[in-house]
Image 1 (cartoon, rainbow, N blue to C red):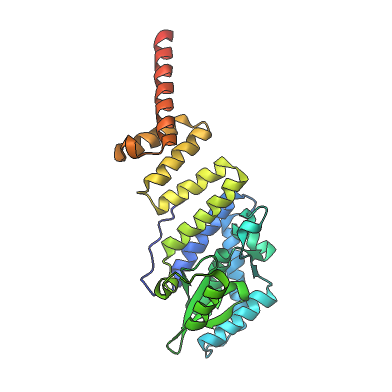
Image 2 (image 1 turned 60 degrees about the vertical axis):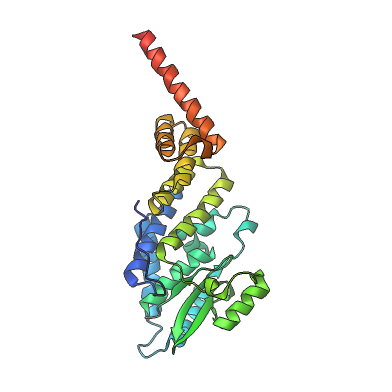
Length: 287
């Protein structure tokens, strides 16, 4: 699976093509982690929602009017709702899997924001993802003024000042500069953050095979990350794939000195090399 998406330009809304690619990637990883639904079927379900939504809009609508129509359709007619505090769930994984969210009509703000943005694009409403946590806001421009959609409050629209006041009140983000709070998120950052959320959920589940799949996807997003490479080596070792683990560790230590490496990686590397040497000696004796 290739998750190396090109980032959108700073401040530019996501294009239809970019959103479709992101939807396909999230569908693919969701289906691989929970292979009950083919990824193509997941995408078609979202496309059907877009087709249905277009019958509710007119070509002359303003951005605010399009937003109002989308909110009515998405949150009230279709019944979607955001689960803002994934950490409170016993098992947050289903709230991050696209097909599960489409079925349950409830999910993580990041997943809802992707569906919502795709639908918005289909009716001519261009949105940006805004780099905010612990929730997710979407931004659009109406008559030259920035407006922000709060997906955790059924699409409630805020001005920049209202948004900052809401963040300071609800999430106590007083120390964060306003310019940083309102920065748009490029597509590769969105995918990385989404995969990291999945990783946290599957660490809680204790499923190393699923974690390896997520780790590989993260490494497609960040191919030069030594930390991810080291983590994958430990996953390979945990799964009994010692040859792959040793290959990753050799690559890791070719770029990183031992004195700067975590003790766990040093120990794993030494043990695997010793294991390989014992295997070679055994084979020589047998010959």
